[in-house]
Amino acid sequence: MKKILLTGAAGIVGTALRPLLRERYSHVLLTDIAGITSLAENESFERGDIADLSFVKTLAAQVDGIVHLAGMVGPDYTFDDVLLPNIVGTQNVYAAAHAAGVTHVVYASSHHSVGFIRRGEHIDETTAPRPDSYYGVSKAFGESLGAFFADKFGLNVLAIRIGFVGDTVADERRLHTWTSPRDLAQLIEIGLTTPNLGYELVYGVSDNPGPFFVNTNAERLGYRPKDKSVNAVADPSVLDARPDPNTIEGAVVGGRFAASGFEGNTGRVAG
Image 1 (cartoon, rainbow, N blue to C red):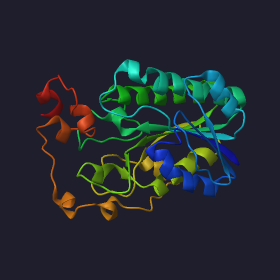
Image 2: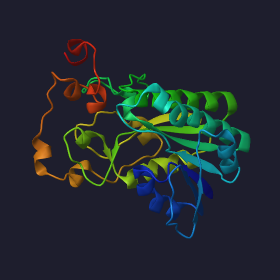
Image 3: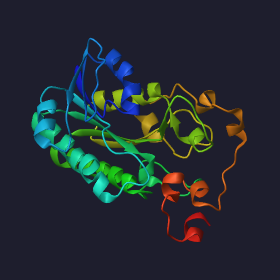
């Protein structure tokens, strides 16, 4: 794997990953709807919208592998909000990869695709989606689409249900969902370089206490997290915080994404 495409390169996760990816690959082609002006020697940038299939095809034709991060992220987006960037855009990435003969795609899914599952339940790579938002719905769609392209067209796809990526751990829930850019980059490398990967799903989390997710599939593929969320805690009181299991936010792994706009039966979800 020499040259890779990074979609959503101007976002928080893309910005954090760029220094790590350009160390591993000879060239990183960046794309985003937002501009990027500061480029390393082995980076290039093409601005555009992944909802435009012809644009994505021109990018895919230039690379050996794709890391697909682009999309709208948030608890309150409507279906119409996520339709083009998250759903149509993801279809375009997979279709363009297939058309260009790209062999490996890493898909940035999210733990919000299983956000309505209660904390403490067994959640692993076989766990079916229970999205907590239209954002989560779009990520679950991308997982299924990746499996389809792997099975139908022979693409190799690693879907990573990413937790929280950030410099610090600011609350109790993130203590269990945090991932460092270094650990996420390790998973991406596994997804880009594993021969005959087919379709696999893993969780993008570091070595965290009381993990929400059983990540043995990632370990089977060679993942060994190097960082711990407890070392990134901003305020030590986070280590002693306890969620309220009688609230939606405290009961399920999706936290505020699940709680935002909730009109369902609280007792059925949090009881």
